[in-house]
Image: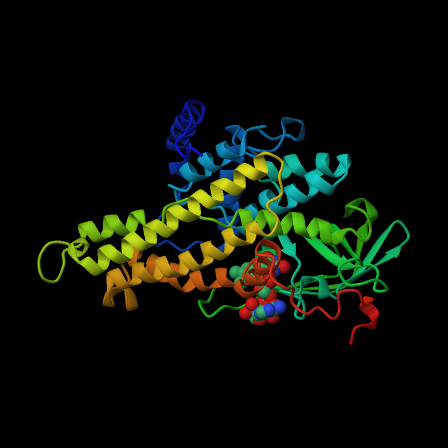
Length: 403
Ligand SMILES: Cc1cc2nc3c(=O)[nH]c(=O)nc-3n(C[C@H](O)[C@H](O)[C@H](O)COP(=O)(O)OP(=O)(O)OC[C@H]3O[C@@H](n4cnc5c(N)ncnc54)[C@H](O)[C@@H]3O)c2cc1C
């Protein structure tokens, strides 16, 4: 495999770079400024609209669905170049592009594709993911939110949790139990849900940082028309797998985390003489981090190539997420160490160090979000390495007979 750009990819990169240089700076969020959620979403929508107008939205999506019909590599190239700018691209945009469009394109009806894909690509619709519940996170198929058929639609009751940015979302992707008489993975159905529907109560969860990125979402007698069901009743698990595969494959970083640390070490005077990079210990830590980053980059390229050939990476996608989460935590820890005591108590005007501190605190969440480390390791052990399976007493038992 040649990891350098082909002439065609190099041309695409140059075009994307020039386009971004012209359009992105006006949308960049400067380091150290705090904006409220409403303004962030407005800025995120404006940037996504700019991307759409520039012809870079939905790069891998077929032109028949409103995308660019480009290659996976082009999508990676654009994401790498876009990552050079601090743009508003939170879950309110990412869930729509990475999850909702993926599931609707693959499992939805033509009517749903026409209704949602273009609007989402334009940034007109924001989305949240209503999967996790208080007793169904790693074991997602144990979820209890139920949808009961009623007339030309469904009535939904239950509780979701950790719903990122649900308080600012127009629509949600929802999985609910529609048949409790079959084993847990088989009785699930997938829906899109209008977050303004009567009966939805969104309660923000206050984080230690003071922010509220997540919510508890209570659903009481919420009516969903059957036209908002995605896939057949009982096929919700296949839809969830489409979503989770995209989430895991998309979790790698498109921006070098180690490059800026090397620049920082080169520019920072050492206590003795020279720069921090003159220290053997610093060089060793940076070299290890860089080697891991490059290894992950090449592995991600391999899996994306598989996807572009129409192959299914299956549990291999979990390796991307597992490696990324560990690297993120390790590299952001290294960034803290390089800044020494300043990183513990940064001066209020030192926006760069405060950002490093924030990244370090945030890095822990990736060990859990989108599939916890231990659960991914179980899947990789069983499905990639062929090791004996975990004991699953409930696998073939009807859900309503589980204790
Ligand atoms: C930043 C962030 C954003 C999120 N956003 C969303 C969102 O928008 N929408 C949404 O639906 N959910 C979201 N989640 C929820 C996320 O999907 C769950 O937190 C995750 O699936 C783990 O579930 P849990 O929190 O219930 O932990 P649990 O499943 O209770 O796990 C607790 C611990 O037990 C371990 N464990 C569980 N089962 C096993 C096993 N079989 N073997 C070994 N160890 C095991 C886990 O690894 C973990 O360490 C988000 C989470 C985070 C952190």
